[in-house]
Amino acid sequence: MEEAKAFYGRVGFSDVRFDYTGHVPGPDREARVVMLSNPGATPVGPGGIKLVQVLDGDGPPPEPPGGGWGELGITEICLHARGVTGVHKALVAAGAESLMEPLTAAVQPNDVSLDIAYVADPWGGKLELIEWTGLWHSLPGPDRAEGVNHVAFGVKDMARTRAFYEELGFTEMLFESTEFFEPMAPWYPYGPPDQHMIMMLSSQGAGIEPVVLDPEGPDCRGEWGHIGPFDFGIGVASLERGVEALHALGVETGEAVTLDDGRGGQWRYASFRDPDDLYVTLVEARY
Ligand SMILES: [Fe+2]
Image (tube, rainbow, N blue to C red):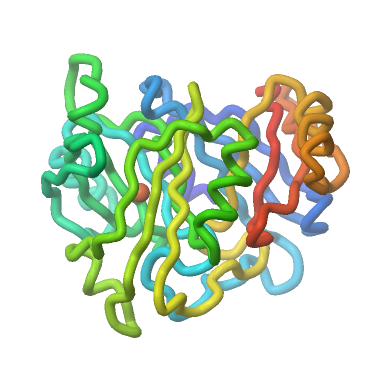
């Protein structure tokens, strides 16, 4: 955890908002959970990062094997960046491995331009860097990572996932792609699959990027707390109201949990069942 905090601190997530060690209901594990935010967060890079170190059993479960990108499970965290090239270079200097050198692309149907690069963090988790040059002009200043822009996850049925998350407020489609993104080709141990991906945004907050692969590849959901990206949370102002809203939509939730870190921070969450049984929570951050 200390190494991960130091790494993400160097990427800009220097603000430790919550730091808890103990029982985590829901997954029913002993774990240390640290919430980090980036003081340079912006409207297109608003999201924070949660680090989890499982402490019981054999410790952190290993990353599910055999995946490339977009198999069932959480597949990447994307940071918005001012100056993708400079941030990519800084990440590699901080111990990340380059997975894709910076390049410029555009996504359809609105021809939105972007700069993009990928690294693996020191634990192998894929971190994408994007500057949405066709969408948002970053604030002035040096190259830097902002907060999380989106999370990508593999699903089985795009229409079903889209309908589900639209009901949760992810109604604005930034792009849809059915073209294989060629720079990702070296990542797939079983050969490049067909890719169908969309990005859905809500009116505020980070976005979601569901992906369907053909062939679908291995199931990479893994155990809660495994090494690499494994879950995401959707922020709500009131956990009770959020749970009520999900129940009104017929979505099952786990119990509402409040964890206190003893330093004034409270993490309130309830897990819910998304169509692919991914680890997803509603989060009311009191930190
Ligand atoms: Fe992405």
